[in-house]
Length: 207
Image (cartoon, rainbow, N blue to C red; front, side, top):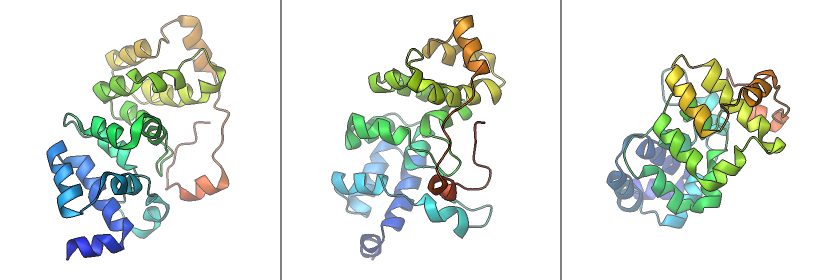
């Protein structure tokens, strides 16, 4: 049966939930998780934390789903109301925020993915979370790499000036002096060799 096969493979459960959070309504996600897969909330959290991307970049040819993005990243692309809130309630705020910062096989986290795809509504929601606000506050020097990476997608990869203005406003970066600082900034952090081995072709270096 489907449940028996899924019970034996965390990879299969991950792939099914990946599609559910990417494409389905909140009600259908709940049905898939509880009825089809028979997962408790604790087991869903375990699947969400599963690292499938380590092998996906090598095992598929182009044209098929490679599952290179994290479940949280694809959930940010799902425009159905309540999906991200469902993830937040399952994981708790601390783990939810940690999952937002987890990089996929392209070295892009979920917040950066929202900027890359011009998903302003979701990006504004994520940046309104108090812990995320703290992690993107420009007054703290420890956040500067993180802010620079987000600005890379907002400024360098977008053509919509209104989108850029809205994000700069949320980040409180409209001061010409602050913005000029980040335009000159160079990212300090470099992914470890272990992280680089996990990344797929064309991963972002931000240098």
